[in-house]
Image (cartoon, rainbow, N blue to C red; front, side, top):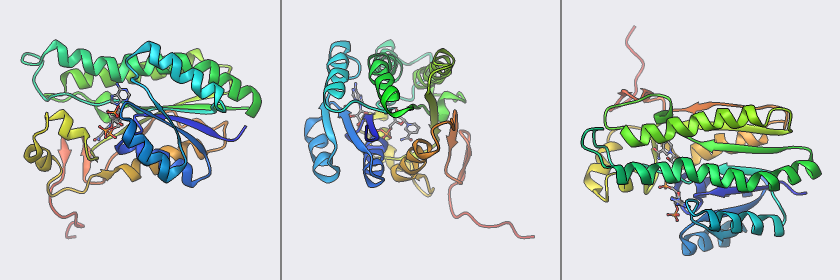
Length: 257
Ligand code: NDP
């Protein structure tokens, strides 16, 4: 089988950039998200096979996995669909927001992984190996005030990734995790801040964040490693961000000696 990878959340940001990068390096790609017109534009550019699917709907996820199997199978899966809602404190946030974050970042990841595992095993049988990579976040490694539901969801996704690696022990399927810090994508913070463009601009003001293409390069690089090499946790931050609490704004300059 050709190298063929399924990327969820491919209609924007890191997911779309990853499909572009995989395609550049000769991978066949399957781009999955809810917005059909965005997927079509990506397909016209990259040749991706597209599947419209809400990862929080188990029926749609089962159909997606069946379509992947019927159209050429898969040797790779990137669980990238996800996002944040709000920056409210634990005290002031709403269970509705938490539920939505948990559904997409954790339950969606689980459903897609469970549905895709038989397809990936088939890929591993014919090609020798398969790979799974989960997009978590530095918010899944360090808590911060206002992180609440997003921290909880990404910590959970981080834990599930480790569980999966243990459970797949003995199979030729590597399980990887990529945890980025600040990435300037078109929609992530805008959605998190409920469409407040000014507040969104402030997040990226006077700082050099990662671009989606930076994350995609590293992400696809992990798939391009020899198949017995498992980069099990990749933490990727902009140089200007030394922790979730330390973001340098302004020019980066060597200290005077
Ligand atoms: P975007 O908001 O640009 O992209 C999110 C993608 O997920 C979209 O393509 C969206 O497509 C898709 N998606 C959302 N909900 C669903 C759903 N229910 N079913 C299917 N697809 C869905 O965000 P980024 O590219 O910035 O983020 C990608 C991943 O990286 C996320 O998991 C995010 O949490 C994580 N991350 C982002 C960081 C950042 O600073 N930007 C930092 C660290 C991690 P559609 O609406 O068409 O379904």
